[in-house]
Length: 47
Image (cartoon, rainbow, N blue to C red):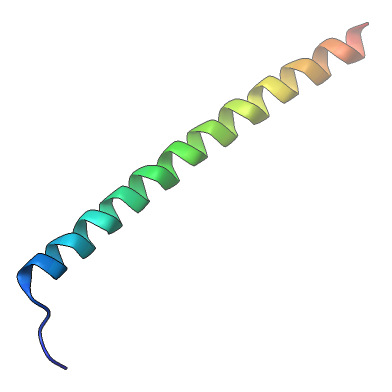
């Protein structure tokens, strides 16, 4: 297989890094949503 030009390789690395950052942020958002949802459910059961 032919080696990719450096600028394409660098773009691929940057895209992969951005993808990982977005995955981490999505995971944090999901955790926050789950936490708020659990708090709301706990409040509902006390009422």
